[in-house]
Image 1: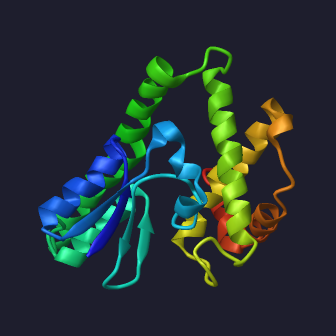
Image 2 (image 1 turned 30 degrees about the vertical axis):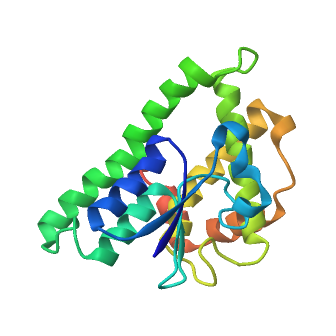
Length: 207
């Protein structure tokens, strides 16, 4: 049995559609975003990032957040919808990650601009606020572990290094009031930027 924390959003429905496709029994726990229930202590104990959907797999004890991670986890769990043949698998992953990196964020921005944006908040400032929130979340996480995913340096760190460095720079230049003392992020980033492979990677391409 899976516990699904969700609401009526496209990301939430990715999880419920995948659960239905896999034929996995699940229990729905609504998290009403209009009532800000994502910030309730009960939900934050499941996902400190305050985002739906989240699943808790009672069989394995795993808690998975982020809609793409949930869909991938369920594909692995049920053994369907993710081809085994390398060429087909990578073609699937290419478009899977394209949706995560392009479709969702683009349409989410349109939704925010047309339906949710307060008139006194510019679009740029809105993303500045979200960047600061993301950095605070990461800082809290890194207070109890040396790397993003735990005790080992992984692709989770590699994915974050260039964007997080850029994000801090953008905040410092444009919205210094949003900048906090993210000492754990700064420690992690400083150590990462000293790795020889990171130094070489950040210098590419040479211009």
